[in-house]
Amino acid sequence: MSIEHVTQICQHLKNSGKTPTTALVKAKAAPGTPLALIIKGIQRFKASQIEGDTNSQQQTDIKNNVDVANVDEASPSQAKFNLEQLTQLAHSQQRRIEQLEKFNQLLQAELKDIQKQVQALSIG
Image (tube, rainbow, N blue to C red; front, top):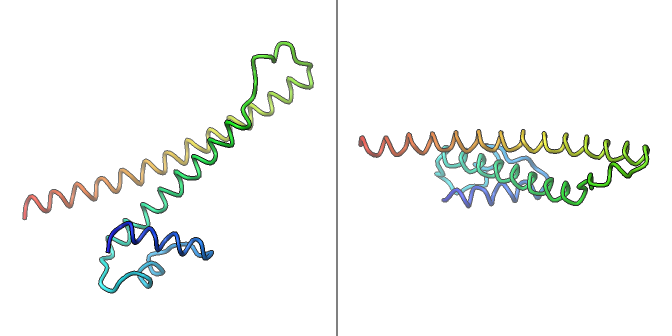
């Protein structure tokens, strides 16, 4: 069984309204699937979900982008509206940064695991 198969199981669980957990994925996986593979597959699935959410948020931000070039010519109420849009955009960007930081942490953890496995193979 591969990590890709584990992520497919996770997606199937999510599509059926369930949160992928180690126990649920193990129950659906082929017998004898290593627990480490299941955990890595779940991590990769979660990371891809964060990345997908970030891409969706970025597309939304682009659609809602504010034209600040004409703020000087805008009425006070229009300037206030633009300020509110900019504030929302700043909050959205902060959420995206937090999501990317989580994604980065997951990737770093996976990299450390892979480095340990390579080192163990080199020693053995």
